[in-house]
Image 1 (tube, helix red, strand yellow):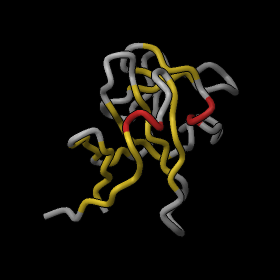
Image 2: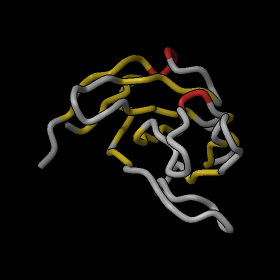
Image 3: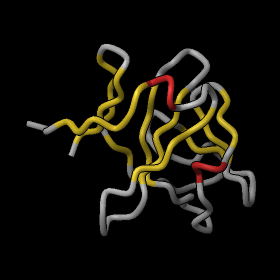
Length: 103
């Protein structure tokens, strides 16, 4: 069973943008918000060369890495073909306008 940590209000994350969470030694987590107000959480490190996904462009349910243009699926953290690789994803949800992250 997960414990949920309050991160912020949904409105604190810009649509088609992200917010960084620094939980500790495991590396930064980027929480993304789509145009439909869905939220996703991924390790903030592109599987290609470690680019900061939080600085990428969100489109649909993907984010494009700002360094080399890799597209990463927000739902699963996997690179979109023809690229191969992935980053860790984390459970995140919105309740009553509040964003919560599983810890």
